[in-house]
Image (cartoon, rainbow, N blue to C red; front, side):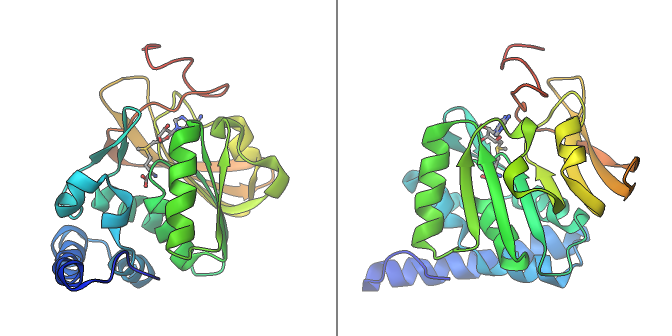
Length: 233
Ligand code: SAM
């Protein structure tokens, strides 16, 4: 993966950020129980600083979400790792992400999966993410603009689906775009404050198992099979 900038000064800050990335993997991920070596390796190789606004680059490895414009956020590194680990990827999967945001999680997924479709409803975020992913040569990630509650039927079915925004329930369109044996991870809940992170496993064509992975807090999933509007709480 190519890293931004190459003059002497930026080379130094690039090295500082690389050290912070290593520290983030150790202190925020491994120390809190993330064990999947594919996830740790991917999080250790994607330059998060390339996905945050210029004035927040030195905060890229902070232990929390950061604003990315359009009232949206790039998720906390631990939450990104937790959700991707919960997808139980072994490498080579066909993956769908809903909520591209900055494109960071899509880049991490792209390090493990064979290919990633990622859908964003806000065109300016989608276009900026696509530009970044191209600059970083994440060629197996395709960004689409649309209502991700409906999934991306053209390229379904998927081995794994991850939703990076909180909806009132798991959209049926997304369940139907999972392969048998596939996993879907998303925050679900009726409250503006918190959701439960759930994993849905499609065990048979008509049978889904649901597992609660704990409380989380996400921006709303807005769309036909999500919330009506940001104020619909
Ligand atoms: N994965 C992102 C990253 O790595 O930067 C962070 C995602 S941010 C927490 C949630 C995103 O979901 C926002 O960019 C928001 O616009 C998007 N979103 C909300 N509802 C959506 C929908 N129905 N379809 C696609 N994207 C949606």
